[in-house]
Image: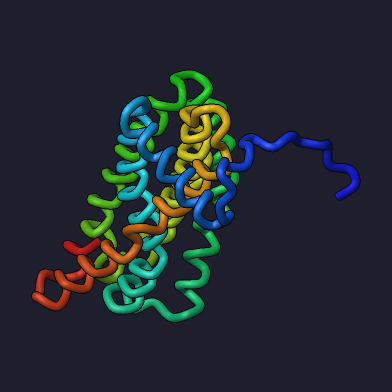
Length: 204
């Protein structure tokens, strides 16, 4: 801690004095109003982020259910699949940043990432079924890992680039909250479609 530089406070204490909890909520409310009125781009991005983060965060639980019930994978096979996903995320992040994001910019790279993610996830159920589905799943696991490595750094960097000055702490708190707000939705939709007999491929 002694190595950290001295950083001046971003805000002064409210006058008249009030509790820290009340002052914190008032400041966050003020920031939300400012974002809505003066930063429509960031507000739209937060809405987009709430949906994309919900999809990416619920991917693991949905994928485990799908591989177990549709592909009849064992625990070892599922573990190998997710190990491939994790292992391919790091090189995927490096490659996509070097050859895509650095050349076309953050916004276009983020849009292209979402388009690629959507396309791969829509096409996946066509191949991930039957006896050949297990072997093909490892290929899709590699692709999904690359997309994970592309998505997370790009979305976070784009968010930081859109943040207004002086509210970094609370805005990053909003970032974390937005990413968790609708995590329940994809799992509920997946389960609802499956219960109605639509099949897990439609849910995926």
